[in-house]
Image (cartoon, one colour):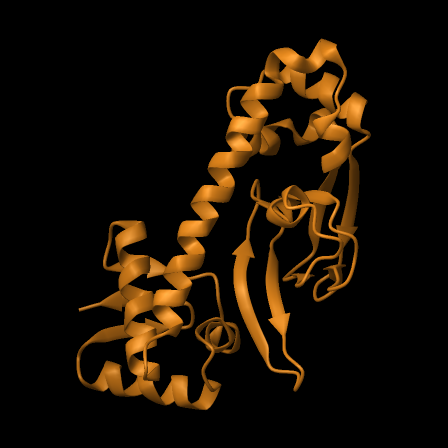
Length: 219
């Protein structure tokens, strides 16, 4: 477990928690680590919503697939980030999304119920973890609202430009990389891939942006 401490220290769930407390906590809750190959399912819709996942290596995508098989990417989760926390905290019986490895990905799973019922010896840092968890959920609610703002736009062009401007603001630069290839970006924006590629081409010719793979520059 100690070999992952560099990653775990950066995880927002453990902000303000000392290393010795992390060791103590993991012993109490019996945290488990699993590695997944590219495109392998980490969590499937319908599974029990009892675990919080922490990405130790690689990355994963959270997605919804509708009745007709159309894929919508909810979010991408990178190293030190967590997933599944909202469903576990809400005590939902099952999760309503799929979580898929984008590349070879290592994940630590924490049983939420066990974390809530840690022994009294761990209470000195318990409140800090709960505070961190509330902050993470609140921050992700803001990101969900941002996605609603993006996908509620009427045209592919408006959706794309709203997303890119939010990314520029996040990166504090007009040059930035996004965590999606063309198909994944289309799935995130909930638009057709060919229409998205055509719109990126138009915007490039109009001098609005420069694009190469997942790198963008707003002019």
